[in-house]
Every structure is written in structure tokens, then in C-alpha cells.
Image 1 (cartoon, rainbow, N blue to C red):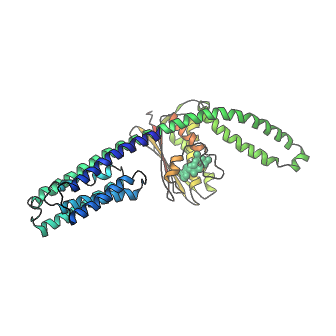
Image 2: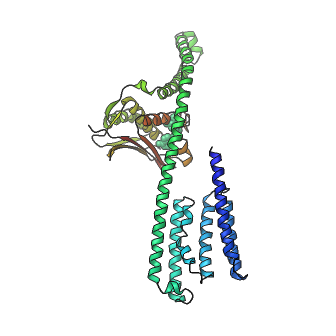
Image 3: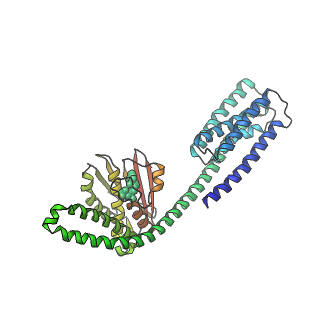
Length: 398
Ligand code: ADP
Ligand code: MG
């Protein structure tokens, strides 16, 4: 399905690009004598056409910047080569609009800044050197033209801002849908697999424990190690089972987040001390949510544990909770290893773990619990700088 959409989008992209190239060629050849300005004009048309045509194959920042720069070059060249065509000035105002097509924030600000610098230079040239000889329509009403230029930039900024907001919303919706789909599949998988594996494991563990009591056998075999490994396997399975049957954990109550966070941090303080990590807790009063306390503990435990595990020696983990509008916002921040965008995309995928002893199930459980209580979870992270996990739950007024 995605491939189909890509193909469809590509098709439309090429229709539009072909149309743009045709327009540029028309502007170049119609009523234009072949001389040096024709040559400069055609070189720039060729560069832009090449950028636009190769963009789908090399969708990277460089090609985007090159396209926007060469387009800016194109419009300014038109402006200076054909001073008699006053409408070229209008085109200059709309140069940043090109980067809206690429939905790239940095590129948009870059092209807007560049355009402002170019316009200041152009106007200074017209005001001080040209003095209305070639560009009378600008020189005679400098103030009006400057105001028009500023207005066009503000307009573009709003268009960009609104388009960007909309796209972000759609992207979030798409990610949530993907996550929900993942959860559904893994839930079913968990129920099927966990039962099948748990029973034989219990039998084997029982026999091992039984043999471990025999002194002669115990000396020859590594029973403690075998039992230990089976314990780990059992731990993974119970985590999995808690996903497929989350209701097992019990009933829903109105819970004071403060108390649950205190319980969890007290449990984890010792764990943090192993690596000299401290946990700083700051919770606003009366942060109540409706949930099951065991599941909420499980959620905080997984997230704080991850934060500690990601921290380097001596690093602190901040846990804060406060009320914002009609929600309780809980933030868990560490200054540890952080994650790349690729890693962020994989969070919540079963068995995704970069730790040698990780199960890769913790976050999957977290997503499940958050979804169950109509909450929301987001990760902000930068490699080498740290991570902030933000949880949002509807506030319950007591
Ligand atoms: P596990 O902790 O068993 O590896 P999780 O599902 O809890 O499984 O986490 C999955 C992976 O996400 C981790 O292995 C780690 O790479 C990454 N991760 C989670 N939280 C953080 C964090 N705070 N900082 C850096 N990486 C993290
Ligand atoms: Mg974990």
C-alpha cells in the first residue's frame, strides 16, 4: 500500500515538475534573442531542472538546499537580466515558498533569511546606484515596495506554519495507528506463545530444583546457573503475559501519582546507586489519575529503570509530575546516551533492545499501559545528550 502511494506521489511529482520545467523553457525561448543573457538564463534553467528531476532519487538535504539556492539564483537572474519585466519582483518575494514544498523547517528559515539579505542588497543597489534608471517602478515607491515585501514574507510564514502543524498532526496520527496495530499483533502473539513455553519451562525447572537437592549430582552439574537462566526466561514470559492479560493486575482506582512515584523511586534508588546515579523527584500536589496502581508502578518502573541504565556514572535522573490544563504530565529526564531518530522509531517494537541483558519488552508494556488509560507517551532524545520521556494522563479532580 505504501509503495503504491509512493508511486502515485512520484507520478504527480513528475507531472508538476514537468509543467514547471515547461514554463521555465517557455520563459527562456519565447521572444528571447540568443545572446549572453540567454546563455546565463539557460544554464540556470538546466541546473534547476536537473535538481527537480533527481530529487526523488536523492531525497537528501543537499539536493533540497541546491534546488532552493538555484531557484533563488534563477529568480534574481531573471530580475536583473530582464529589468523591463516588473512582475519578476513579485517572484522574488515568493522565493521561500519553494521550501514549503519540501516541508523542511530549517530550509524554510534559511531561504527566508537569504531572501531578506538579497532584497536588502537589491534595494540598496537600486536606491544608491541605479536611482530609478533601470528600475523606476521600485525606486519611485521604495517604502511601498518594502512594505509589500515584508507582508509577503509574513504571509508565507503563516502558510508554512499552518501547513507544518497539519502535517505534524497527520504524522502523529499515522504513528499512533502504527503503534496500535503493532500492539494488537503482539498481544495475540503473546497469548499464544507465552502459554506454550511457560508450562514446559516450569516442568524442567521443577526437575532441576529436585535434582539440585541431590548432593552428588549438585557437585557435578551447574544447577544454580541452569535455574537462574530459567528464571530469566520465566521473567520474560510473565512480562509478555501481562501484556496479553493486563486486566489480571486488578481494579482501577483514583491514584495519587505522588505516592506511586515515591514507592517506585524508593525501590529504584538502590539500583541507581550501583552506578552512582541519583533520582530527583519533584511532584506537584493533587496529581490524581484513574488507573491500576500496579500497572502504573510497572510503567514508571520501566521508564525510570531505562533512564538509569542509559545514564553514565554519576548522572542524575529527574522525575517530575505536574498538572497542566486538564492533564497530569509526568516527565522522566536523563542525561545519558540518548537515542538517534532511527532508534526512536524502533521503540515499542517487541524484543527491540540495545542492551546485552535487555528483554526489549519494557517499552512495549509501557505503550500498552499508557494506551489503556487514555494517556500519551512521547520521547525526546538527542544522542549523547539524554532523553526525556513525557507521559500525559487525564487529570481526575477529587
Ligand atoms: P530493555 O530495557 O530490556 O532493553 P526496553 O523496551 O525498556 O527494553 O527499551 C528498549 C530500548 O530502548 C533499550 O534497549 C534502549 O536502547 C532504548 N531506550 C529506552 N529508554 C532509553 C533512555 N532513556 N535512553 C536511551 N535509550 C533508551
Ligand atoms: Mg527497559
